[in-house]
Image: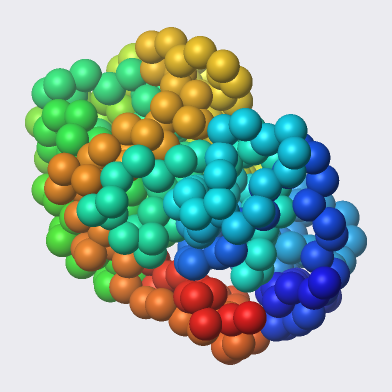
Length: 334
């Protein structure tokens, strides 16, 4: 049996292909994909073959998707045909075949499958924010208004941060940040960027920062904006170390904490304060979506056909204003 898929066949080239679909083994679940979300930063890094990405091509991305179970292996106990589910670390394909431990139920009927396809991406933003241990009334800041950053910004607002500051190079993304609840949206290339942040925070600097760009310079800027005893979660993957940091004056003396916030650094079974499992974060996010606390209409801006994958990924490489929230619609792909 065959399935359709989007593969990165060589650096800078994405193709809509046909690949083999293995048999459904006893411990696997076959899911017919409805939507798969693009995680722009991760996928661009892999498409370009940047340092600290897997070696070799082809590469197959698409770690956040939603669909319906069409078949389960004999040993699978938690899912049945027809269940609507999230697929964690699956692929951009019309059929995902995965272990049941990495498939999560969608318990709410009032959330669209398009919105659900972004839940696993959103969980990474939430996990990064949790690690800052932000408290009600503290100032908060997010560097980078890509898809993870916009979700982190929403969760920061819900956590009671005041003010909430966004930083991004793109004027369009700064406007998106304001639409999603930021009190201020700043251009980090402005000559007085750090001074602006200090004025906004009454001279103290920011208490909790989530750095999502993966840029070494952005991390240094975050340190310049930080208050004493600030916590900075490094959520973006800083794959290239091309910018020096004065650790003595920017980290050691002010007592700033730099916190690695890769999504794999999570408890596997039981959540505990500031460190929730992937499943618990996903369930919390779906509850927020179901009750209207998170409005994905302000985040998801485009839906594309997988057939147009080559054009979509060309835009990802070349367009500085590539859509923040974009997903592939697989419902008519057989």
